[in-house]
View: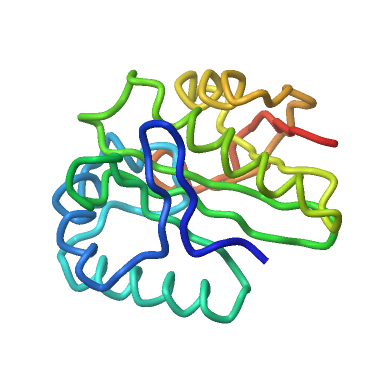
Length: 177
Protein backbone atom coordinates (compact mmCIF):
# COMPACT_ATOMS: atom_id res chain seq x y z
CA UNK A 1 0.00 0.00 0.00
CA UNK A 2 2.81 2.43 0.88
CA UNK A 3 6.39 2.11 -0.35
CA UNK A 4 9.28 0.97 1.83
CA UNK A 5 11.05 4.26 0.96
CA UNK A 6 9.94 7.76 0.09
CA UNK A 7 12.25 10.65 -0.82
CA UNK A 8 11.91 14.41 -0.45
CA UNK A 9 14.42 17.11 -1.36
CA UNK A 10 16.19 16.76 1.99
CA UNK A 11 14.94 13.50 3.50
CA UNK A 12 14.68 9.80 2.99
CA UNK A 13 11.75 8.11 4.75
CA UNK A 14 12.41 4.38 5.07
CA UNK A 15 11.29 1.27 6.88
CA UNK A 16 12.96 0.98 10.31
CA UNK A 17 15.91 -1.34 10.79
CA UNK A 18 17.06 -3.00 14.05
CA UNK A 19 20.26 -0.93 13.97
CA UNK A 20 18.17 2.28 14.23
CA UNK A 21 17.32 1.60 17.87
CA UNK A 22 20.61 2.95 19.26
CA UNK A 23 20.33 6.27 17.37
CA UNK A 24 16.64 6.65 18.14
CA UNK A 25 17.32 6.09 21.83
CA UNK A 26 20.29 8.46 21.94
CA UNK A 27 18.75 11.09 19.67
CA UNK A 28 15.30 11.50 21.17
CA UNK A 29 13.48 8.49 22.67
CA UNK A 30 14.85 9.07 26.15
CA UNK A 31 14.53 12.88 26.03
CA UNK A 32 11.64 14.12 28.20
CA UNK A 33 11.18 17.30 26.15
CA UNK A 34 10.59 15.23 22.99
CA UNK A 35 7.95 12.97 24.55
CA UNK A 36 6.10 15.76 26.36
CA UNK A 37 3.15 15.71 23.91
CA UNK A 38 3.31 12.04 22.95
CA UNK A 39 1.35 9.05 24.17
CA UNK A 40 4.55 7.33 25.35
CA UNK A 41 6.93 8.00 28.18
CA UNK A 42 10.65 8.55 27.63
CA UNK A 43 12.43 5.24 27.10
CA UNK A 44 14.24 4.19 30.27
CA UNK A 45 16.88 2.17 28.44
CA UNK A 46 17.92 0.92 25.03
CA UNK A 47 15.95 -2.33 25.36
CA UNK A 48 12.66 -0.36 25.30
CA UNK A 49 13.69 1.30 22.04
CA UNK A 50 14.83 -2.02 20.56
CA UNK A 51 11.42 -3.55 21.34
CA UNK A 52 9.69 -0.51 19.82
CA UNK A 53 11.72 -0.75 16.61
CA UNK A 54 10.96 -4.49 16.38
CA UNK A 55 7.22 -3.71 16.70
CA UNK A 56 7.54 -1.06 13.96
CA UNK A 57 9.22 -3.49 11.58
CA UNK A 58 6.55 -6.14 12.20
CA UNK A 59 3.73 -3.61 11.72
CA UNK A 60 5.18 -2.40 8.41
CA UNK A 61 5.55 -5.97 7.18
CA UNK A 62 1.96 -6.94 8.07
CA UNK A 63 0.51 -3.66 6.78
CA UNK A 64 -1.23 -2.61 10.01
CA UNK A 65 0.90 0.55 10.38
CA UNK A 66 3.54 2.19 8.22
CA UNK A 67 6.26 3.66 10.45
CA UNK A 68 9.06 5.46 8.62
CA UNK A 69 12.46 6.42 9.97
CA UNK A 70 13.54 9.87 8.79
CA UNK A 71 17.12 10.32 7.62
CA UNK A 72 18.88 13.22 5.90
CA UNK A 73 19.46 12.85 2.14
CA UNK A 74 23.10 12.58 1.12
CA UNK A 75 24.39 12.26 4.66
CA UNK A 76 24.38 9.12 6.73
CA UNK A 77 21.37 6.87 7.07
CA UNK A 78 21.16 7.97 10.70
CA UNK A 79 17.66 8.09 12.20
CA UNK A 80 16.66 11.66 13.11
CA UNK A 81 12.95 11.06 13.65
CA UNK A 82 9.92 9.03 12.68
CA UNK A 83 6.64 9.53 10.83
CA UNK A 84 3.92 6.89 10.97
CA UNK A 85 0.79 6.29 8.90
CA UNK A 86 -2.07 4.29 10.44
CA UNK A 87 -4.79 3.40 7.89
CA UNK A 88 -8.38 3.17 9.12
CA UNK A 89 -10.92 2.72 6.34
CA UNK A 90 -10.93 5.72 4.00
CA UNK A 91 -8.65 7.80 6.24
CA UNK A 92 -5.12 7.61 7.60
CA UNK A 93 -3.95 8.94 10.97
CA UNK A 94 -0.37 10.12 11.24
CA UNK A 95 1.98 10.66 14.15
CA UNK A 96 5.54 11.95 14.19
CA UNK A 97 8.57 12.77 16.28
CA UNK A 98 11.87 14.51 15.52
CA UNK A 99 15.18 14.78 17.37
CA UNK A 100 15.51 18.23 19.00
CA UNK A 101 18.72 19.03 17.11
CA UNK A 102 16.61 19.14 13.91
CA UNK A 103 13.71 21.23 15.24
CA UNK A 104 12.98 24.46 13.40
CA UNK A 105 14.55 23.43 10.08
CA UNK A 106 11.26 22.61 8.31
CA UNK A 107 12.08 18.92 8.00
CA UNK A 108 8.91 17.56 9.59
CA UNK A 109 6.51 19.63 7.43
CA UNK A 110 8.47 18.40 4.40
CA UNK A 111 8.10 14.78 5.48
CA UNK A 112 4.41 15.15 6.41
CA UNK A 113 3.60 16.84 3.09
CA UNK A 114 5.35 14.13 1.07
CA UNK A 115 3.76 11.23 2.91
CA UNK A 116 0.27 12.76 2.91
CA UNK A 117 0.51 13.48 -0.84
CA UNK A 118 1.50 9.86 -1.44
CA UNK A 119 -1.41 8.63 0.70
CA UNK A 120 -3.95 10.88 -1.00
CA UNK A 121 -2.75 9.70 -4.42
CA UNK A 122 -4.14 6.29 -3.47
CA UNK A 123 -7.82 6.12 -4.53
CA UNK A 124 -8.70 4.22 -1.35
CA UNK A 125 -7.93 7.23 0.87
CA UNK A 126 -9.72 10.57 1.07
CA UNK A 127 -8.29 11.99 4.29
CA UNK A 128 -5.03 12.20 6.22
CA UNK A 129 -5.48 13.45 9.77
CA UNK A 130 -3.47 14.21 12.88
CA UNK A 131 -4.36 15.43 16.33
CA UNK A 132 -2.09 17.45 18.58
CA UNK A 133 -2.32 18.89 22.05
CA UNK A 134 -3.66 22.45 22.13
CA UNK A 135 -0.39 23.57 23.74
CA UNK A 136 1.86 21.91 21.14
CA UNK A 137 2.54 24.96 18.96
CA UNK A 138 5.40 23.32 17.04
CA UNK A 139 3.19 20.45 15.92
CA UNK A 140 0.42 22.84 14.92
CA UNK A 141 2.88 24.82 12.77
CA UNK A 142 4.30 21.65 11.19
CA UNK A 143 0.84 20.47 10.15
CA UNK A 144 -0.17 23.86 8.80
CA UNK A 145 3.06 24.17 6.79
CA UNK A 146 2.36 20.69 5.37
CA UNK A 147 -0.99 21.86 4.01
CA UNK A 148 -3.27 20.60 6.78
CA UNK A 149 -6.24 22.61 8.04
CA UNK A 150 -7.39 22.84 11.63
CA UNK A 151 -10.90 21.42 11.79
CA UNK A 152 -11.86 21.11 15.42
CA UNK A 153 -10.94 21.27 19.07
CA UNK A 154 -11.73 18.05 20.92
CA UNK A 155 -12.11 18.17 24.69
CA UNK A 156 -10.63 15.35 26.79
CA UNK A 157 -9.30 13.69 23.63
CA UNK A 158 -5.83 12.19 24.22
CA UNK A 159 -3.88 11.12 27.26
CA UNK A 160 -0.38 12.53 27.17
CA UNK A 161 1.08 10.73 30.21
CA UNK A 162 4.04 13.09 30.47
CA UNK A 163 1.63 15.96 31.14
CA UNK A 164 -1.43 14.41 32.80
CA UNK A 165 -3.07 11.06 33.47
CA UNK A 166 -6.36 12.54 32.27
CA UNK A 167 -7.27 13.14 28.62
CA UNK A 168 -6.25 16.56 27.34
CA UNK A 169 -7.82 18.81 24.72
CA UNK A 170 -6.44 18.44 21.20
CA UNK A 171 -6.86 20.06 17.82
CA UNK A 172 -7.76 17.89 14.83
CA UNK A 173 -5.98 18.71 11.59
CA UNK A 174 -6.64 17.15 8.18
CA UNK A 175 -5.64 17.21 4.56
CA UNK A 176 -8.29 15.84 2.18
CA UNK A 177 -8.81 15.21 -1.50
